Image (cartoon, rainbow, N blue to C red; front, side):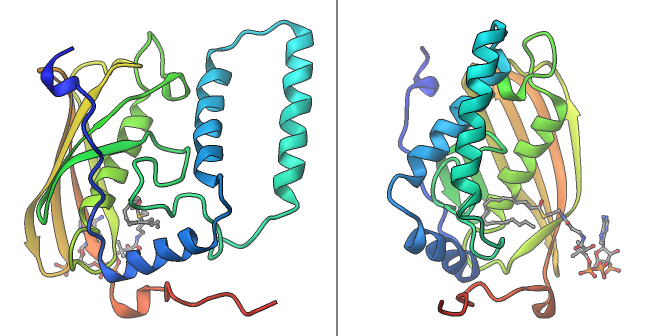
Length: 224
Ligand SMILES: CCCCC/C=C\C/C=C\C/C=C\C/C=C\CCCC(=O)SCCNC(=O)CCNC(=O)[C@H](O)C(C)(C)COP(=O)(O)OP(=O)(O)OC[C@H]1O[C@@H](n2cnc3c(N)ncnc32)[C@H](O)[C@@H]1OP(=O)(O)O
């Protein structure tokens, strides 16, 4: 293990006011144990992708997943009230869609962190799926544009260059920085590395939203 592979503490992004409220609302409302359930679901995705079970195990697993869905379906809410994806300070953001990013360095204009793709994000030949890599960059850039006082922003374009295969189950380093700001336009660049090897680099244009494009984050659902 090299020095850069050693576990380092995750540094939470200092969010702008909009996302702070959006995230705090989920944290206020979430049931104890939610974060552990998210971790279990992420593990399930990887285990599911890696399994080739016999018929009786397929039937048993399907029945258990059906039961889990039924439990959760009884508590469905609208997306304003969901918890999934809203724990912005956490490496996984409380979601299982894109891989967790453990941030290790943050400035107003740059982020650095560690990530890893598991079997769920496998493309072929033990390599990460290119769409998963684009997803990782979008998520990383989304975190970068939420640092400090930047108003909420959306991805307008994202371009990824796949330079070499991205391995699964290996520590990977990510970096992202703001290359240029031009009014509402934020031009971003990022890299994904396995050790010294560049796996992919990306550029993106994010546009900060006009006030009328932003939904209020603080609006609580009506009581009852
Ligand atoms: C939605 C989910 C959000 C999730 C949470 C995000 C952050 C959370 C906080 C913490 C971070 C944690 C994790 C991050 C997680 C996820 C981040 C994901 C981010 C996304 O995944 S987000 C979803 C994908 N994203 C969209 O769903 C966008 C759909 N789209 C639009 O909403 C509009 O399209 C918009 C608003 C982009 C622009 O619309 P608009 O009306 O405001 O602006 P307009 O068109 O007038 O353009 C103004 C000037 O930009 C130029 N321009 C526009 N588009 C361009 C392009 N593609 N290429 C080159 N130039 C372009 C024009 O040419 C003009 O240039 P000029 O001024 O020089 O003439």
